[in-house]
Length: 328
Ligand code: LMR
Image (cartoon, rainbow, N blue to C red; front, side, top):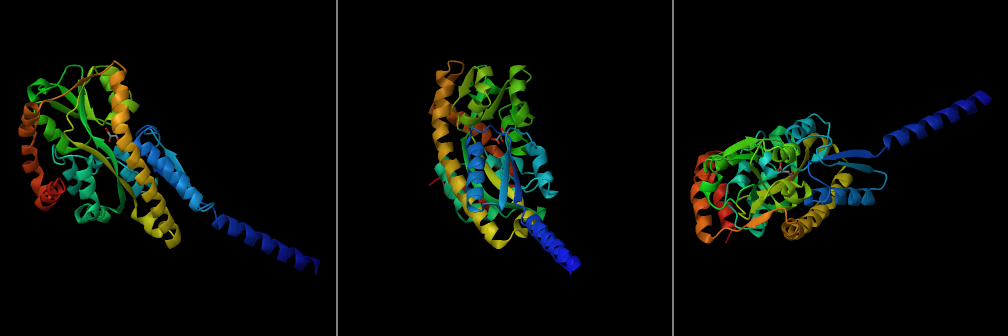
């Protein structure tokens, strides 16, 4: 009898153990390259907060900022291999996986972030979230950062001012063509190296949003920032198809809701930071604002717009037309 009771107890404790093991929280590693005090950094933290609040004990979100876990050139492959569950690279960094997202890099395409938003939330933008399904990557939503500005140690007002200067770019052939169109020398480099490249003068300048220029201190090593608003830096939040579709339906649903709310939070921060980080940079006294006149802007547009034609076949004319419609 004693032996029977002992074996029943042993079985029961084994079952409890198994149940606990089965109920271990699902771990979601979220890797990104920017600082925490940025739209993406804040969005990722908000996602963690909301997901863990709504799914207590069921999920654990671990956010790795500042390229701590992966750089943008390695994160998507790592995601396909199951080494990381979520990331939000800039739209410029997907060209190995789909050519269509190159649309967002075309210079002077969108007139402002509201137009970008109309396009992203419209049918074409939503379809692009699925453009990497054959590569087993699922787009869960877009996040704004903002329009890019040009920084340098000399005032850049016209295309002639930038000719011959070395500019760091993200890994995008469109951005390469954009800088070549104004006779500058583009260099594809990871975000994590930009500050040192600027500090050591290995490059002359870079293009980025006000929040990235501020949070990564590029303004401390660049004397001028040209408010050109010539291009967009936005993100796509992505996950692996295997991970996402393998989740129980209720958990997937709650995670998507948490992410949508976190994105709305990140977008509000993006809007706010495009003004406040700009102010902080200019009041620091380290970087001087360079404003361009309408006539100077027309020179940039004339020099860079031929890039659209170069990528029209890869991107698709229908997408370019839809993007232009969102400006109206
Ligand atoms: C860059 O590389 O400049 C940006 O993509 C960084 C980021 O994620 O905002």
